[in-house]
Image 1: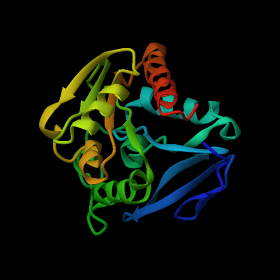
Image 2: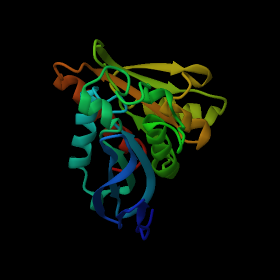
Image 3: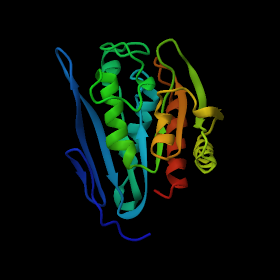
Length: 238
C-alpha cells in the first residue's frame, strides 16, 4: 500500500493524511436542545481500509463507550494504514438522561431505526446521519454494545449473516477477533439494527456485546478494546 494522499471529510470535519480530528455533526433540534453527533476521524498516513467504529448506540452501555474512547486516544494516524471513523456516543439523549432502552424524546429504540429517515424523529435522523455520512464511507462496521439498564451481558459477538457468502465469511472473521462467543444472526438478524449496513453498503458488520451500566467492569471494557485492536490488525489498519 502506498502513501495516502486523500483527505477524509464528513460534513465540516476534515482529516488530512496522518491526522486525528474531532468534531460534531448536527442531528436535530428538540423543543429545548440541539443534538450533535461526536465524530473522530483518524486518517492513516498510508492507504488502506476504513473501519466505522460505533459506541453508545444505546447510551447507557458505558463499557462500549469507554472502549471506543480508549481506542481513539491510543491510535497514532501517522502509524496507520487506512482510517477509523469513530462515534463514541451515538445516542446522546439516552446517554444524557440515563433512560433505559428507549430515547427520552421519541421513545424509540435507536438500534431498530436504521437506515433511518432524514425527515423523521431524532432517533431516525441520527440513524440516517450515521449511515449516510459515516458507514457509507467504510469497508466494515463494528457497533459495540453491552447491557442496558437492568441488563448484564457477558462477552459475545453477533455476526451479521445474509445472502452474500463472501460478506458472511468476512463478518465471522471480524467477530472472531473478540475474546468471546460468536452468535450468528441468520437471515439478516433483527430489522433496523446497524447490521443493515451489510446489505445496504455491502460491508461486513458485527455487534460485540459486553457490560452492565453499574458498575462498569474493566474486563468488559477490555473485551471491547482488545477485540477492536485485533479487528484493526485483521483489516491491516495497525
